[in-house]
Length: 115
Figure 1 (tube, rainbow, N blue to C red):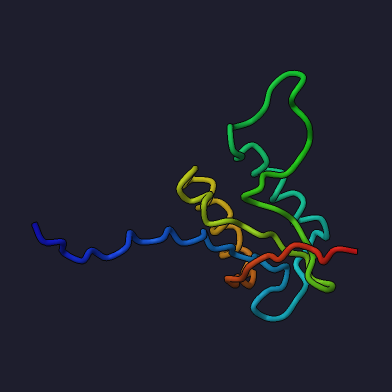
Figure 2 (figure 1 turned 120 degrees about the horizontal axis):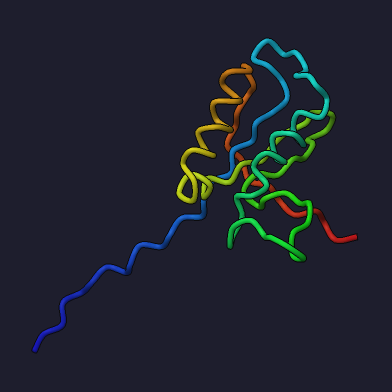
């Protein structure tokens, strides 16, 4: 019995993160100033295990759609895993960016450095 070499199984790639920046393609700051928190709030129910109810319900953002700032620019970090979990939610945030002429870049959100 001869062994045939097999290739290793493909490693799953980490879902990408898309940054929707609060800057239009013309370089203008997007308004209102709390747009990132509003957009992420609208996506808050899309989380692992679904939306919590009753005593476990609390206000918080989904790990798939998080508001943040880069310097003085408001952003929303959208994890590509949202596309598989709820394609309509993914389309909503991507269409929001397109309809409002916001800059969208692919990047990776790094954790804050320990203090």
